[in-house]
Image 1: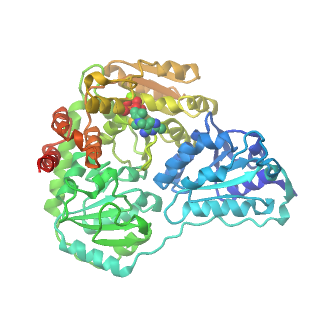
Image 2 (image 1 turned 60 degrees about the vertical axis):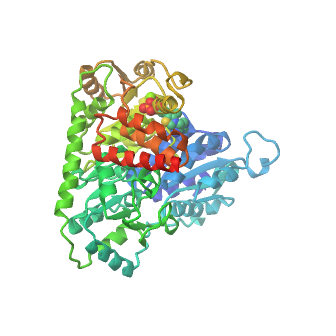
Image 3 (image 1 turned 120 degrees about the vertical axis):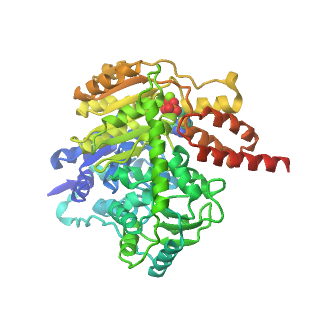
Length: 600
Ligand SMILES: Cc1ncc(C[n+]2csc(CCOP(=O)(O)OP(=O)(O)O)c2C)c(N)n1
Ligand SMILES: [Mg+2]
């Protein structure tokens, strides 16, 4: 039987167990579309190419394996590039398949002709063009393998139009097996050393990041905490995996949560499980970290070890494999009971502080009231997507892991591109129609993917979008005011936009909420509507979150020192917003240090 190049693409993906393909049409890839009809693949077509990538990202986070985006090359590829770069800087495994001009038309001035490989190379682990129809399955398998193995990331396979449309005998094709996840093992001597570090410490804390997520090591991590009694913090990258909330002592980035900040600054041993010592961990520097703390870093990527902060012990290996071996060691641990109690009390006190805002009657709504009402509605298997900036920082204070769900922070990894929320939520709901999927997004960020609410209507994907509407690019507006002055605001206002009406016009359900008591009924109606829904909630732009203040502090730490005298003013704005005395003390210590340096 004859099969087209496009047919080989679809057939190989199907054999790998891939059901969903996210795509935007273009003539070069129509033969893949045609094959999807015959093979029963779930092809979702979008309104912007970057959405195809954002959707694949979310599915990859959820499934912990490469997901597929199919685009047609030329301007389709340039449009998709931000998503590919975002995945690259988040170590998110993707297989991007692109069409391209026929070989006969290349470099002659034909429309949509460009050197595609050149622009994707900096943002992919592996990028190739396939020129032999018989080798299409092999190239797809190789791309998949590069995306999956080692530290994950995006891979790119380009198949020119003439190859997509031509045919060969399927009997001539050997389909490769689906590449499996390989798990490089740790050095056993280093693991014994790790056990020694634990037996010598008094106040250990473990911080788990996306390395645990990609390795699917959540049960091994849980077993580690049960065996050692080391208190655990989850950074933003790890929150996408299902996890019991009562097994953690702090959630989110260092700056977004004072329990995490306390635990890190007071610990005498810090264990990093697949997490980068970047901005989210204060670069491992003072005033958050101290030189006297011992640090053990476990990572699958050897080049990641020692970034920003030299570590005392490095263990290179897959997280699941490393923890599995460690958990089998016969070790006696010191008693961490009082340390655990202290951190547990900190976390409980922090939760009580947040609770005060849950019932706040102020109008427009306090951002924390919005977060708390969403959190109260979440089911045990709820999938929550957070997009925006200030909106994310508020949500991270109170959003907790769920035993059967996950939490994706849209602005994945180090690139932190805003605007992926709608497509990401859509992909999750398509893959899990029976699970609750909620997107909590800033108004600015919603604008990027708003047109995908039409895709949601077209495919009947009932996501619930809650717009945190502060009528502006909130975080950049706040920074502008703090750094340049109250009267120097320009270009950051967005005005009052009825996003709810926009979504109604696209065929979805809309709710407009101006007062806090209207919120719960509106959310209930939106969820019961069975339609893609937008709950457009007016929130007070005035309160400042600890995360925002910490962001500005980090800017100063890395060179924006001229602004350090503003820090005491920022701290005053945090009064009552959940950043407790300990965290304030740490920041003040930092300011004093800077002042001293300035005078010296
Ligand atoms: C793609 C992209 N464009 C611009 C930025 C810069 N940026 C960071 S935060 C932000 C404002 C976000 O506004 P909104 O989504 O309304 O969230 P808010 O802070 O108001 O809650 C901007 C423009 C970015 N990070 N990524
Ligand atoms: Mg906003």
